[in-house]
Length: 391
Ligand SMILES: Cc1cc2nc3c(=O)[nH]c(=O)nc-3n(C[C@H](O)[C@H](O)[C@H](O)COP(=O)(O)OP(=O)(O)OC[C@H]3O[C@@H](n4cnc5c(N)ncnc54)[C@H](O)[C@@H]3O)c2cc1C
Image 1 (cartoon, helix red, strand yellow):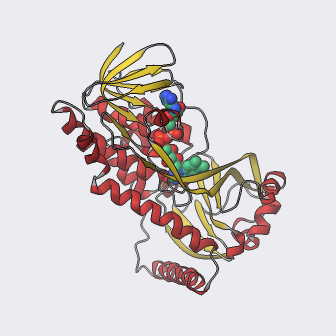
Image 2 (image 1 turned 135 degrees about the vertical axis):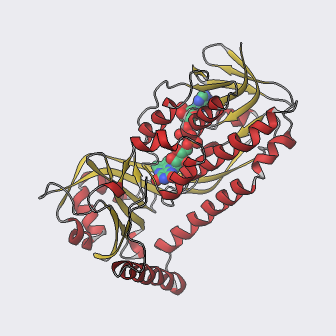
Image 3 (image 1 turned 60 degrees about the vertical axis):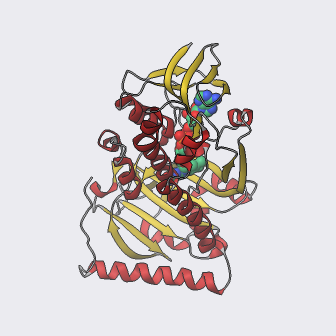
């Protein structure tokens, strides 16, 4: 029997960040995950400026961000914004490219040795107002005052407690990820590029190209079903498929080649019900997902964990018991709620903005294009900052 104050189940981004913060705050913590090293997995592959600023609130940014490739430090240090083959803005780079397993493993490296890492699966939970128990696949049990459930997309444990997952938008978007290189040159002219769709019928949100070390990584966000033949074609002849989807992309990239495997993964949007229970709190994807195209998932993870570990857990541990009234303070936290609501609103808005027909959406798309072009022009004339943001 391992006896601790906080048992974190799941050592993905949310659980590892929580373990690092609690361990550094001197809270007795155990982190349970079957993988001693987080395996390769298609998830978030970059942090933008806003996500990096939320990460700073955890106190871990200075150790994590150097492992990423900052696009502001490559070539002209800007992100080219383009549509219809036309470059409309060069905004200062603020993206930190990093594969998800590298991000999680870098985060894990910040966890102090005082945190117990248990390489096992949690197989059952029992919770109450006082002490919680976690039964593990290796036969051990953890006794803790609080369970932080950070087990991502997995449903098994929540079912045991009657915590329900409500899928609000199945296969809301699909992420297609691959490495891209110029066919006839050593490197692309840009450090990063975001390319918006040419027509709603293209069923895409955007293509983003960003550096990870020496490689140009591509994330193409599309709104399709998993049985759409377009996905099969993309695997078979990706260069042809990309130029068919974005014929004017060639003006910016020249001839291209896809290097290495193409990874394709859908994302459902879901929320949780029945979670206001004693002794257990859900964070990150275990609580709700966001659309990868909006790029809000890691912002939600960092917001959840920052609020939980900076504000709520220290207060909860300072008095006896762990009733549902204490736990509710986290779910009602105004910063968390605002983050969750904004991420859900953006997910539906971006989808409609990308693929919905109808006068209103056409008008909004053109307005977005005109505003971006105006900002780009103003930036050229020095009316909008062109300077690189600092790391
Ligand atoms: C295809 C895709 C692309 C995305 N792209 C972006 C993006 O561009 N930008 C962005 O901000 N967000 C993006 N996201 C979202 C973001 O990656 C997630 O929100 C984030 O990774 C969630 O982290 P987590 O720690 O909650 O879950 P996870 O990283 O899934 O961690 C869950 C952990 O729980 C462990 N676990 C599961 N069951 C058990 C058990 N029984 N016992 C012990 N451990 C267990 C697993 O081993 C895992 O380590 C994307 C998501 C997807 C699916």
